[in-house]
Length: 275
Image (cartoon, rainbow, N blue to C red; front, side, top):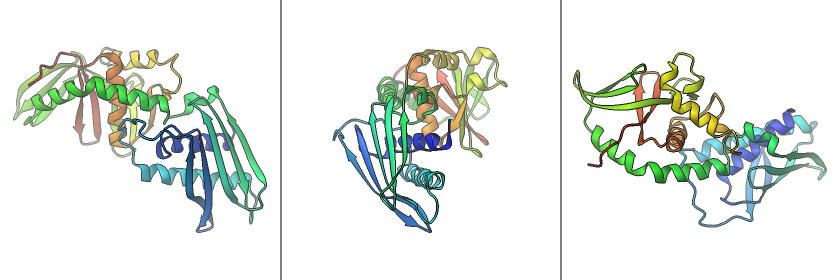
């Protein structure tokens, strides 16, 4: 994949998050900041007002910054100074097909990029992922609330990867126990989510659910985030992905086991009685 195509995919990913849900085209008018182009305005076309979107824990400000960085890098790829980008238009049909075109300050088209299904495995933010997020929220809501009620007041946790048992503690004593498997882990320093099936330090017995999620998405386009071994993610987005993975396995809830270096996401496989 060439650099222009990779940057076009970054544009589409970012617009999936920050443009109006349901958009079929987005027109970006660019301006300069410190001699680098950025998106001064963004106009969505064909959007559906009121279209439900899952709460994925993404920070629109961070995504907007990533969009501007991709635009600046794209300008370096396709323009020769002092000419730079002035306008970008992205058109799409669902997640699979998109057309990206950019014009420079002379009004000359300097980039035409066609995106198709071959590129979906490299995508992270897709409408398919948002749809999975909505479904997961509905499936997991009761279980998450029940787990939160049961776990209220516990002091610590302990997980045995070989017996797949999670113990919540009060003081030094076990208080509640659950059957659980590891979905993935989030590293605080690198802000990266690592799926359990890609973690060679884990026994295979505690990563079976995570592997089933990977295998179950082979024929589902737009869910590359569930199949990549690791990907950049801040903590709320990592939790949202873990919740999606758990919902696909029929787990009762996700317990975010916080430790000094990050978070271990555990899918609770035993039943959780409502309080």
